[in-house]
Image (tube, rainbow, N blue to C red; front, side, top):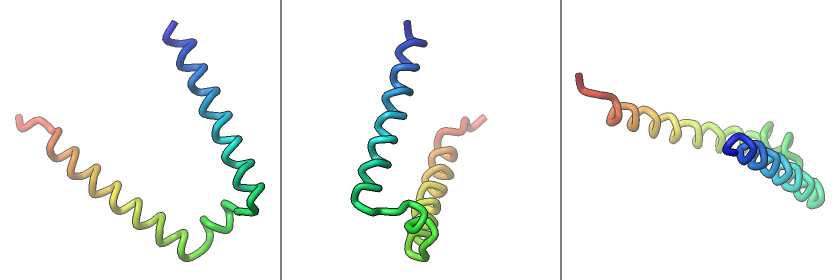
Length: 66
């Protein structure tokens, strides 16, 4: 049973991503323009640095002290 539920969840995720892309294109928002713009690059770098610091912090505290 759990395998079929995970497949259903994956299909739901794909459908939602498709709907999101259709909504963005309906409003004239280009993902390629956002990603390639200097502001978009700065935002992605900022999010990456925060996630990287969070990962480093969490692995430091989760790692066993053997």
